[in-house]
Image (cartoon, rainbow over all chains, first blue to last red):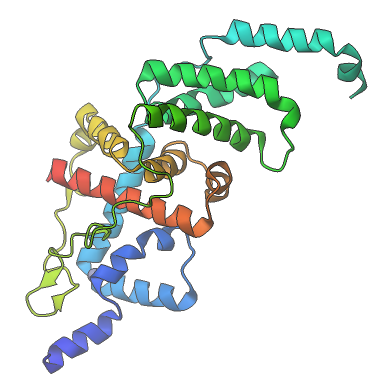
Length: 99
Length: 187
Ligand SMILES: [Zn+2]
């Protein structure tokens, strides 16, 4: 390793391979202070990892939008469920009123 | 009150169930879930929230149905364990001409700054859905509940019965796999 390479790696603190593994912990705010410092220092100097973090955030946004809306609000057996509920209430009138 | 509970939870339960089995089977599983909820409500001990308790009932049912159809990956599996497969970025991509292994040679292609028409296109949403569906079950459950349904990590740990560390690992694996699928599709 040349002096230059040694200097750059030293400045970057951690490898990109390690930094990308820390992205979710960074977003969850669960990194230890020392790891957070390494991660943020690396990020401030590394475009590749900045882009990667932006893209994980973009992925999260796209996933939140992908929420399917064409799902039933009520289950198909809602009437049967309500009937069971009524039955239970009829069987245990005392319990229902006392509790 | 029961109706409000059903309206609150039925869509999310159905979305999660549909990541395991066909829509028709998923809808049946969710119907059975509600029936079980009514029949066993007396055994609910309030140690978890009612929501996570109901999700656990649904997950038990849908996992066993999916298992019978041979569509399930063991829940304990965190994902593929082959060397390199577990990395957030293919290690072969992280080779810098001067710095060597472990460093980006160039930043990844910036698909995330594409115009909104591409990012918000229906095909992109379909691609995201497909990427989520093809995740190992454990990752899919965590990603669906956290990033689609918007649950907290604590709620997800309760519903799935997993540790916070495991939850975070599964979430990370799932997110980076979907990121890669988007890069492959959009770049
Ligand atoms: Zn980096």
